[in-house]
Image (tube, rainbow, N blue to C red; front, top):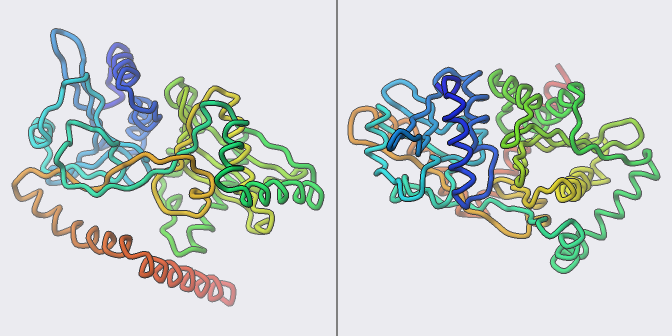
Length: 357
């Protein structure tokens, strides 16, 4: 169990991660695994030892029939093992040692040698590079998206004139502001026909806990854009010393014409750069705002590692047909766009019906 890790093991995990050369993503730290373990009791961590020293860590969730999942699958944006360079057991050997028939992931970090050869589909995860400072980032935006930047800054000024002076708080500690964000996000999920993540108690409890967490490798950061005294956009994410993982952004639809979500992301980039953060990871998934804001992309993978047996067969029957159907739609933009329009239409109809009830 992650909560049973010794201080020595936690320090070794952090040290191995720091030496890996990969971005210091907070989802890959021991703190995130421990936070998820507090709300999902199937979380486990395999620890490798060599010559009396811990040299590898593999966090996972273990379900019935040996079905394994990445820790926080469905909400965690970076997944995998943390191991000493050169330590790369085969995926099936890894599963056997952990008593797993399968291990499912949807944001496997690129370059995970322990899972090389696993059946997986790659996805782009857009990022914002502010390592040279916010002014340098604005310079990039002016070159690649001049109309976008000009329009967004103009809307920010108009918001300040017409609603109230704008104020941005990078690390808001007020729990009421977090509740407001979660309410906006739940409404957004329903409005767009998506599954409401915050309807799951473990996710809402996890987010509230992470909002209070203050560790160098993983701290919750709630950023809020105010107009006058009213919050108009907010975002909750996780940060390490050098990476801000963007997680749950939303805004008040009443102020949609001012594009408060875009304004919020610009101010987040500015504050992150000032705090010594070099990269904002926007997470996988197509979105126009990500295309406008990004300076580059990382790669993550979705799929599963399996070991022959009954458990693997049951996993395939339960998950693979729907995964392939989703992949088929994603790889056909016109079909995917039609699907999004259908979801939005159904959501509007549900909203209208609820209003008449």
